[in-house]
Length: 496
Image 1 (cartoon, rainbow, N blue to C red):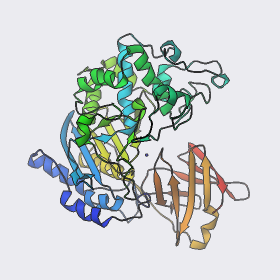
Image 2 (tube, rainbow, N blue to C red; image 1 turned 45 degrees about the vertical axis):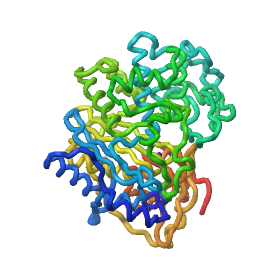
Image 3 (cartoon, one colour; image 1 turned 135 degrees about the vertical axis):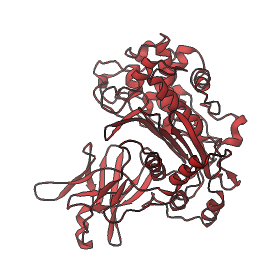
Image 4 (cartoon, helix red, strand yellow; image 1 turned 180 degrees about the vertical axis):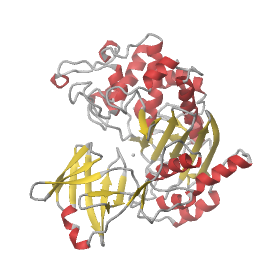
């Protein structure tokens, strides 16, 4: 899922000089009107949060250099059609291979959205029941229920909505050349699998907790019910009908598309060993695609919910897919985000060296897909915001203007230290006269370092994410925890 720009401390002079002449690769010529829109998007990037009297706009070229992004690919949707698509920078800098609109990127957890379509196709065809016990359909392996599930059965809807109380948030993939585990070895946490066994953490259907492990169970259900390899089923029943003919769930990727594959990079400029990782957890993280193909899925979803297309799912089944299951956001393989009264469906994805995001509006047929081959999450946020502002999406992505108060350097010591809860381990550190929120994980935001801006003694914001942060104090005034978005409490577990 960046120092100020997420831990990017190594500046590659070669890359920075290279982006200039590679800025923008599109095989298609657009009308003057569309070209003007493209230029507006490219020249109006901004942060989620802006400081009062200090708002800034940047060009895409500037931000690619700032974030050390090797390559970026964008597809913009307007009125239920792809208005334009364009690639920027390098697919592979050492090979001098440019990003084009055909370049394939790893989609990461965006794979889960198409997986949900595939599962619901089986529901629509009467081969699965969303509310049935998953063991009804698992033939080659059974989920080992224990006391933690408290006698409740996990359903297919639980798997797709991350409400099954199932372990394993995400997967790291495998280096090319390493032994690749079978899906059963992954489910049981047996070598050569590099992840823990996928098991119950608590009873299902009580709350949302993201689980790539649950999605992987759905992968096996598809295989067991259809008797076909997962990638074959998804190609025939989901990708091909939607027109996503350049995309593939096959892992490792087939040799026939090798020339189209982007190479993954970290935000310090280093190349992912072997260029990319292999993900046998295909449903959770294994899709190779490009923004043009992924935009076809977004458009099909938008048309299907209106009853204007059913290439895979009916209007009724698409409505089921886009309906939050337990909480207000997590639907089936997709998140429903309400921005100032306007609903979007969206998802993001992170694989080793790759980050992507798509957004589709429920009304009006607007959307955008951004894929990068650099481990950085801020850049695509800025691109999506620029698209939304350029195309005047209703009530969406308006920058939040905040007033900052300045704290004396000598008053910052009490805030420093480590804060943690489960998979979250964050640090607040001091650099010169400022303090920073430092994060280092490969499941949520990657490796990041963001400057803290105070609004009062206890509250702060970062410009890169539209999040709320509050220091929690005990009765003596001592800082004991960090509250993030009123949802997560990270206890202070150590000082500087």
